[in-house]
Image (cartoon, rainbow, N blue to C red):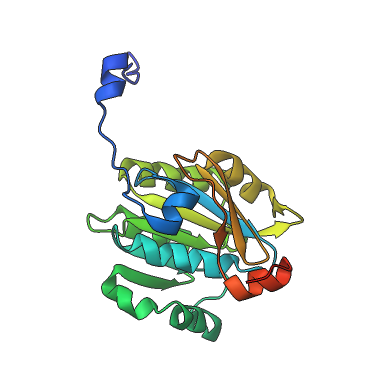
Length: 212
């Protein structure tokens, strides 16, 4: 039996391909530019530097473009997460934001395979997924096929994502978002972005010894 191979695209095919760019504005436009809806990112940093807070702020912004699911693997449905949602006034998001309480990988695949699954998925954190590299690519391909965005949150060891899987993800995703001292520093396939995003102005100023 002859194996079927993927089609080859002409230059005309590529140039006429329709994507789904997100019409970012303001601070997030300056930081991330204009990503496609099916973008991928990793937010990583040391403990207590604001990476989860930064992730929540990005999640809130993304509710302007679709439904967001935040899988809280590390902290679960906790007082800490509750306070983060309160600080960021997430109640205004209504049903556009849902928190998943330590949802296992297999259940997450089922959820994201459904016709009306969330448009964006946050996984906090990589170290608590307990998945293999193969499973990572399984979820990645599902999200790409459905045209949905995925954002990973990771602990760090020094200035590198902690662990082999997190390091592999860092090299694979579109955006690498390093968090230190309550600031988010973007790198990667930026389309017009590149500006540092300040997560907590007062705490960032104190950490970096700035005058505000």
